[in-house]
Amino acid sequence: LITAKKLSLHLGVSCQQLTAVTDEESSLERSTVTLTYNNSQLSPSDYYFWYRQHPGEPPRFLISHSASGKPILEQISGLKIQVKEKQISMKISSAAVSDSAVYYCAVKSETELLWKHKTL
Image (spheres, rainbow, N blue to C red):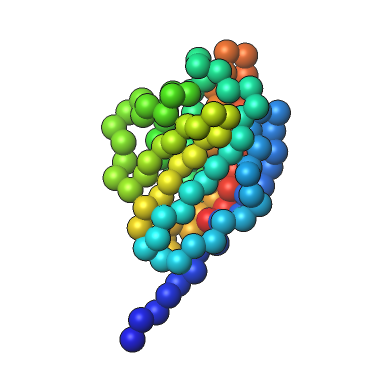
């Protein structure tokens, strides 16, 4: 018996620089989920910070990276960052139901700190 569980990702707030590419992402368990934001003002000096928040819990830091996509700290297994033109993506490989959460992306630019969130 094979049971397929579906994951759903909801994308929300829009800020000056970061805009979610889609409002919702869905995926089967154990597949790859990609969370993508457009950044019309991408700068080589930008740094990005990703967080995950499960219901009833505070956000937890996942990974940070430069505008080139290079992780600042050790990369977490199962997470991959991709920066392509004006898009910033975090890929979650082998997604599980436990990955269902709100995901936040913050960008630290030279002048401000902006927050965005998505729900998985």
